Image (cartoon, rainbow, N blue to C red; front, top):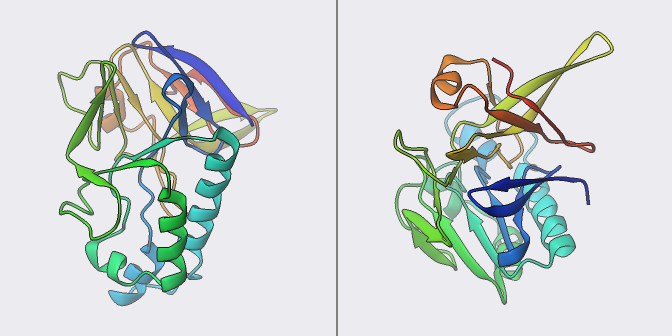
Length: 220
């Protein structure tokens, strides 16, 4: 399993190439911004038609990460569904897949800006969650310390042999860790955007996802 191990707030964590975060000591897998049902939501609102396989693909990758890590706890950092109607539009097959993934695991849904209310699906629904000094929430706060969040869908670029390669990325400094979007069709915000450069400390690092995840200074 491709990953980059790093220390954050006194804990050893691993950034997986898939965009998930693995906390071995807690046997906890953390993902952010699944945006399940995005293609359905876009079509419902009259947007361009996208292949309706994003939910299936996202759940398949999540199933693979759970199989490899043997995680007993899962936390989803908000925007797990593209909107509340996307939840009701899930197929019976997708609902059964989610229920199967949840079976025997402590599963926490953190509220996001796309899914602000409680969703009628198994698991625990919270605005934020604290474990061993780490705070998990959807959007980072200005006074954050030892905080893990999502929301911004960060991406970072790396120059390889004269080519600029852009990938979803984890952003990390002494106070906060921002996860990349895990879902298909989620897009991203470049780490050079002022929204992110204002949030992250000057010595922040980026961990690019993919088959060979790599830690680099955060591009600014």
